[in-house]
Length: 130
Image 1 (cartoon, rainbow, N blue to C red):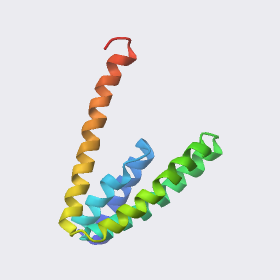
Image 2 (image 1 turned 180 degrees about the vertical axis):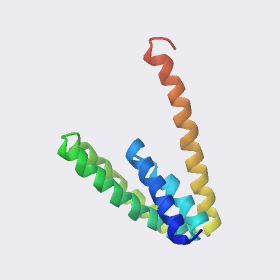
Image 3 (image 1 turned 30 degrees about the horizontal axis):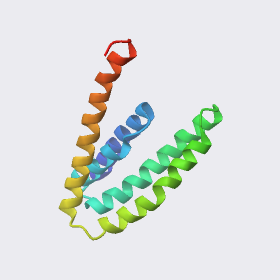
Image 4 (image 1 turned 60 degrees about the horizontal axis):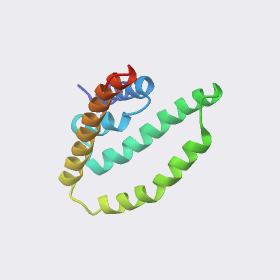
């Protein structure tokens, strides 16, 4: 299969995930870019940021028009993440590619486990049991 077709299919899956779930695009985009399209982990992360930013802005526009955006909370959340993101980027630039890939896998796995556990705990708590 050509790289263009793989890129289009992977991009479609990432777009569907972002549209349906509201997040998680980079968890899908980074492995797709690395393993399907041959990007290095650093290049895949950068490309993923661009892809997720573009698709998020598209969704933001639709939600803002519907009046469903909490601008102050969103701005505070973004501001709080700027310095840590810059620091982590500086550290990541000095790490070997396999270490970055492994760290990404650990974080994605941890997030998946936490989401599954909180979903189960939320079921019982929501019904007054638990």
